[in-house]
Length: 348
Image (cartoon, rainbow, N blue to C red; front, side, top):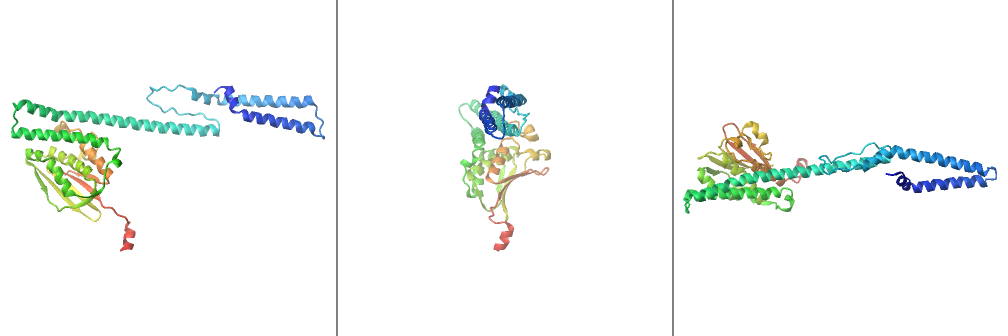
């Protein structure tokens, strides 16, 4: 800020100050009890103006360094956009300084969130592209080796690969809807047995090809959920079990109803999950030891999405994997309660 702009911002104060001096001069000049010489009065006025001017100039130079901070060029290419303002000399400047720094801090947080989200999307897209290439290559190979006619086994394998492609496409769709979940869900009473059967039917070719036995040993229970989103969650869990369950294995689904919650458990007798990996199975992109050794194409996106969507629906996903006993994934549906325990006692 230049000195003249500094003065222009204070022109009202300067005019008020001059009017006060003029008023004092008039009072002293017309006061009958004081005989003041005009030259003395002018001398006092000039002295006051000079002292006031020195004060104004001094204040300007004291604050000049702080004003210069607002003239520094901002490099748009810099990685860190947070350039805090400091060096305030007055309460007014501290107020501006605090507000500006808060804006800069919030701006930096938002920028970091956007960059993080972009990086997540880029990582997801790269992993998805890697995933979908595998079934596409498998289908192409089946076509090339079929001599124009697919055997029953090749037809089944083609259908399995097409199902894999459909699953990967669904992952992209549901991943893109994570942030707009509130625009696309409908919570209502739904049959768990119905949803489970739909998912099993979708994956029956993989059950047949690996000779995996499916057991549903519970009576039906209805829960509050969105059947479309729950179907996707179940599909991620069951396809994951199918990947890591060997031929002639078994997948058992059971339901348990308690006073506070309903539990849907999917248990397989597959290779299990190492204890060291259990805490990270829901992390995005985490494939663990099994993914690296037994499923080179694993990207760790299925369980991540399943867990994210479960949380948004108000459900809870848990995984247990005792050594040499396979893996059990539980989807927990808490029951809605409109009264706390104390109120419940009063009502009873």
